[in-house]
Image 1 (tube, one colour):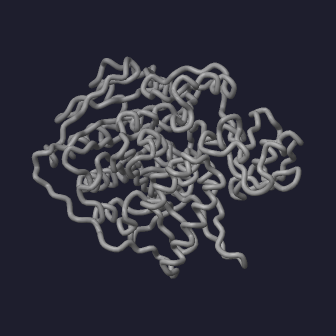
Image 2 (tube, one colour):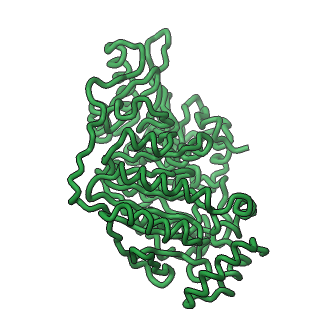
Image 3 (cartoon, rainbow, N blue to C red):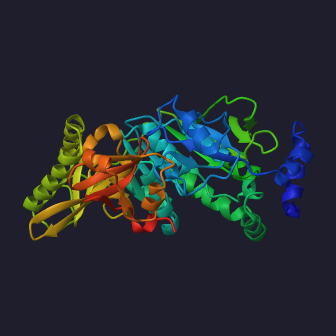
Length: 484
């Protein structure tokens, strides 16, 4: 591959000062095949259940050493596979799995993924949180925020708010608020050269300087939003020190209250240091099987005496013209639907959550673990869980479930007469994913409820809703997601 001359000159200078690396092996790696990776959705697949799924879909797979849920695959994954549409796995470049592993999200925390699209890191953070706490996934690009929304819904992540804001706008709203912040920073993308020709053209046109300005601003905004004792992970997919070690040195020069947390992932991860720190991590493409990444984990001292400004409080704005009577009737319609769909224990759990988190915005129902005023005035793409909406009919208000609700379920939550299970090889699955009506056998009809919504599953994984009608299931798969 012909690499930009300025890039080669700069890297040669780096390697002359770091003689432990073989420059020829580095440059040769750009002609190698791109490593392919997938990450299992641990919210849907329990540990120990990976390999029957992996071998069925991908054949021979090898674990990725720096991600406990990640695997190398030999063939290109198909976007037509039913397991993909059920959110069983996420297609992700192997190096990109490192930052969320390093972040170490825990249930009950408040976490910000500041540059979140397309969602690889946010989906991992969400599964680590196990539905407990608040994940704010921010993306400044409206187009990329839509891709982020789809991937989070595929993974069944409910305790997430997707914002479409600048870091500075979020900084104003969330001073010293988050327990952990991930910055997968916009960068010059040198690690993507062999995967994406546009990345090289962009580098030749703009170079790293434009990104460096943004990176400094993003780091500063994150500092203001991170609580004392909080964790900050900064990463890029580029090789230059100006966006990596030098960027962290500059940040630590101005914020000495941070310390670096070290990690050990084996020989595939190369330790790196700046002038003011050690304990950073690099994935080099000639050493680890990945496109390349830089990552550093910082923790903020608790000795600064900083106090967070209060977030908006007071009466929740439901942002709809309906009376409280209408809100209660909407809640009743929602819970009435769940009572028909869920087994008793799952219904009681859902009822308890709804009583605490129910928010009605126009005709849309949301479940939000924090007061809705927390996000008042911000551009919000997704407001917590979106189980569905209320429709007005001559017979009263009825609840219409969302596709996101179906993907957030597990089979053991749903009554047996509300589940249609199809094997991954059943050709009706592709017809369902195309939006077609599917036929059911006499035996299947006998086991299902006579009417109403049923959950379509590929083996044990929910895929979407349908509605029983005689000897068929009317399709409820979203039009925007259907296969062509």
